[in-house]
Image 1 (cartoon, rainbow, N blue to C red):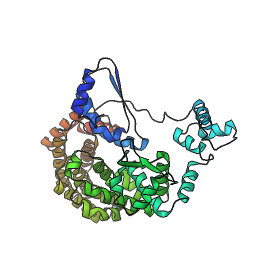
Image 2 (image 1 turned 90 degrees about the vertical axis):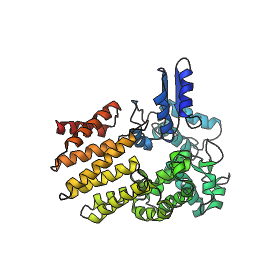
Image 3 (image 1 turned 60 degrees about the vertical axis):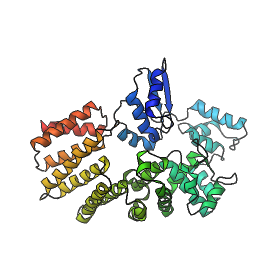
Image 4 (image 1 turned 120 degrees about the vertical axis):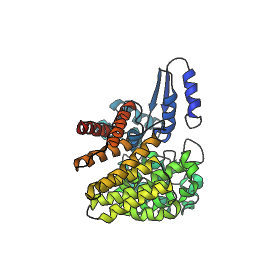
Length: 430
């Protein structure tokens, strides 16, 4: 829904349905834009969208899905005592349980409050811990198989439907991948729900934990997986595919995302990673944005290294040269606000340029159906810092700022950080 029909057509269908309607959406983050467009056209009052997503994507949803009021329910799917007993009985009935005789108290103490996927995996694997299960399965595979599985697990982490099999045919371990698709593999992969062209780990929880162990061990293989997967996807991405949010465009975008993915998983290799992508991605404004954010983050760690800040500004300008887009404009504004704080001599110059980028980005974003909080957070935070270090707004800047504050109220942007900055800014402005 929303991916097979145009949002306009989907909303027209919903509006014509008589009576209450419940719409269930899985993998919410991957169809966020379509859902936003549909909700913007819905006239029917008695319709409820129930959307599910993995916890680690909640931050992205909160940042991007700001134009609508909605309650969030977290961690409510963990096993109760009765569910844990029923799960054990079901496994025993179908001959899948391997735990044999075990005291009920010990069993319940280990699985109540855990996810069904983890409990089920343990019941079927001698009740070993999940980490031990994954490690034992990994030990049964050779290095090529483990690397192929890591590629698939990483792809699913970034894009819930996985990666197209034809993309994987171009990686360095195609034979190992074929073995993972067979019944003989200890770390099996399978085709996703959307058809035989996309591949995912057969057991999602094993894939997630396998990836987590590679992250914990700061394994260079994880960096190599990031780089190889991104290089395999990059030739299938261009301006048109980005505009249409194709699976490959979304996957590459998340593989390049510094703040949410690269920093968390391969930060020690980040410079080498982006350097490895340059020849394939230097046309892409997102590439330069993320490189700018990397250099800015390095500057935060080494605030006396002005070269890092200069490099960040340079990369942010390269992003705008590649494409004048609200995201690239906002990234440059963010970096310039930091430069403004660092250099008192060029304070007003940096602020003026940053503010011009904010205004231009806001003008362009105002044409969008769904808007996030990021630009407003950058703008309000930058203005507050400018005022704190003695800067003064012009009459035109003050008027534009008040319009932006009013705009966030009209849009009902509910981001907590934005609301706090807005209150602080309104106090500073009197």
